[in-house]
Length: 88
Image (cartoon, rainbow, N blue to C red; front, top):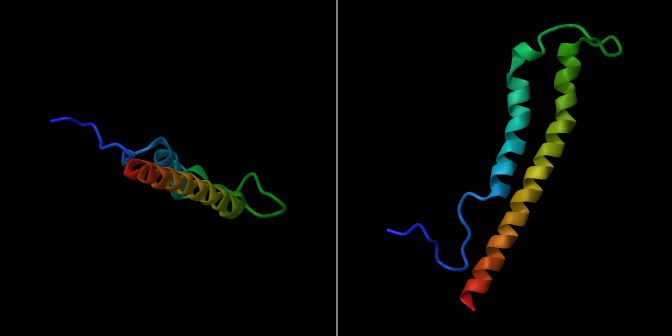
C-alpha cells in the first residue's frame, strides 16, 4: 500500500496548518497557566500584575488569531490551486 497522494492534492497536515494551530494554542496556554502570573508584582500604574497580564493577552491573542487566519487562508488558496491544476 502506497502513501502517495493523487496529483493535485496536498497533505491534510501542512506546515502552515501546524503553525496556525500553534498560533491559536499560545494564548490559550499562556492564560491557562495561572501559576505563572498569580502575583501582584510588578504592578503597572497601580494595577497588579495578575490583572494587567491577562488584559495584555487580549490584543496579543487577536494578533495570533489574525496570523492563524492568514496562514489557513493561504493554505486553502494553495489547495484550490492544486485542485484546479490537477483537473486540467
